[in-house]
Image (tube, rainbow, N blue to C red; front, side):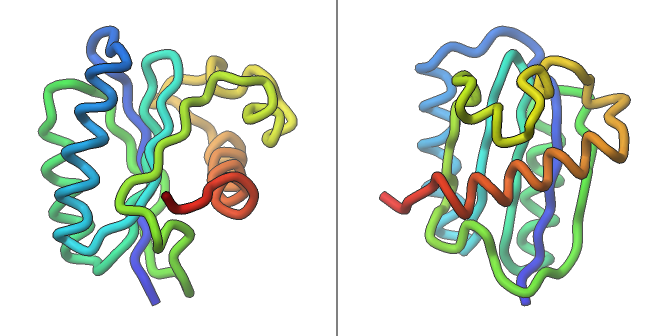
Length: 143
């Protein structure tokens, strides 16, 4: 069993590729050290993140992330024990959500622009979770 936590948030300003690369670099080092895996999606100013690992470590990391001034409107979508990790080989996988091919996994091309983290519906949460699981199964390969 592994603990999985999924959250979404909004960036407080435009983040360029260099800044995202820096976030990923630091996250990969820290997560590897803490034995936490996960996935970061970023699209049009919104972060979608999955964290997996030992519960207390994941919760501590989430608490730290929630204090990060680079984003706001942080909303936990899902948290709990699961049978196995989706991202066990990744300290922090990253998928830029920009191509129609990736968005089409949801069956809705405008999903990522049609909601706000502060008012995401249960149906959108379910769609996002399915999208993340599809990404893990069909598109991500450890580097």
